[in-house]
Image (cartoon, rainbow, N blue to C red; front, side, top):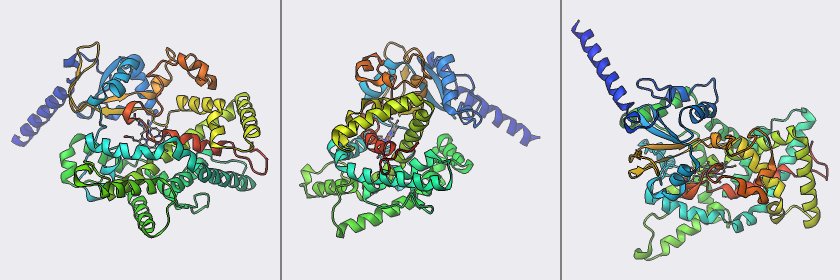
Length: 467
Ligand code: HEM
């Protein structure tokens, strides 16, 4: 009897505690999106596998105050969804010093060392230090230098398509672009030949596995969200086990670089920067020098961050072009003309291809690979024009997909119209409503590399285009 009474008291206390935590937004006058349940908040709603996550978020964006802002709960943690373009820009650009971080788990498992060191998870000055060094790897000069490497991989992709077509008229474009992207990134990042186009290509397989979220991984993630202290105490590993595979590859390549020659790839750039830092006198040494861990983590991250996003973009772009044959023909004509003018396909030629830019930009608008992005508040912040104060530690999320599909900003949002992005139409785009690569100082560091990958979209074999 006493045990039951005790249990009842515990349950009621837990419920009251959860209710109190879930009154965070209403007590601040912020509308709360429906669907929050005791203990789990909106997490269960957002994890519903029967509906795409971006559509669930879109419903909140459209119906429950999300287009300005509305409150959510990740388990018990407050998350403010901000959808107003001016507020989006305030958070991501203007008042970046209040929102320089992303949510960070700081896992304690030794196997998470690489994960914790990645640019995506790094925080504060540490992030700033790594980001400023890595940014030098992505200048247009560097991209241009890598063009021949990418061109060779694009030839490999076209060969692969022809070989596949002999076996089966159906080609899985997303998977094929996954192989191509893996080839390009591993070649440009560390001069690795991954044989991705072969049947037993292990690299794309390992990378693809990392994007499958098993119930076990989800449970670990939820544990970090609910009781991070317990997750750390139990030494729960948050990074995918395949991270180790890529880490070993990078370590092995670094060893080879000590004896072998340079290639001018990302790994070389990072290693050179580190040598420069080491040679500096104590006073001039940067506060956060590039450690071995940072070099390894950044190389592994380039694979993870660039693989699925780029393969998705190329896959979606070809899918849209296959459905819109007029647009496809117009793109083909543009590229033929550019190739005639330049004699061959060059980096400069791709940069001049404005219809190609429109097609890729429009594919990224309709199907942004990252359908939302988020920041963690690092010091209390009053949302401009409102009484709402976002407290340190609160998460702010931006519904990228919804902004891209809002007809207030994009007339006929479901229509594939590459001309929206023509230079003469660009001033019609409301700033803060197009963010496939995020915005502000913490946006995608690799966005410039997408133009390079586009070579794979319009290579021919022996003058014969693929249809
Ligand atoms: C079409 C391809 C890609 C898309 C759509 C994409 C999208 C994004 C988005 C939305 C973010 C978050 C930005 C924000 O929070 O404001 C991001 C961050 C990032 N991306 Fe990409 N990305 C792409 C390709 C790449 C490539 C090829 C690389 C590397 C080689 C890369 C490396 C990164 C890194 C390191 C970050 C974290 C930046 C930081 O925290 O400072 N991405 N990306």
